Length: 80
Figure 1 (tube, helix red, strand yellow):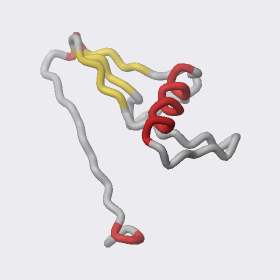
Figure 2 (cartoon, one colour):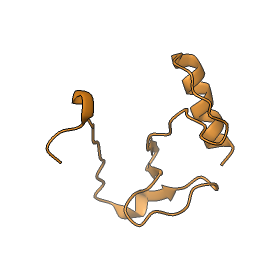
Figure 3 (cartoon, helix red, strand yellow):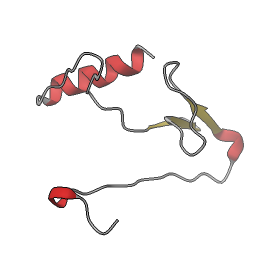
Figure 4 (tube, one colour):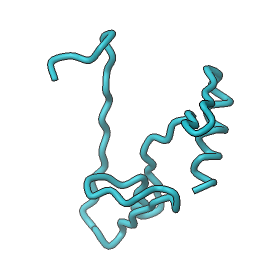
């Protein structure tokens, strides 16, 4: 892909750990396993989470307010 619409950007981040015995993959119950990505990784005492948006497709819900987006994202994770 040469460019995204409206000059949109994608940001990638990753983690690496040398001691795989400290790595635990985390997956919410409502998410299917992915062969290429983990929704979360617990490495040692640090939890890394993939993005979980605040959009609820089944209900058509979305809010432009940050506080509400955070609550909806956390609720989505807890409902998993």
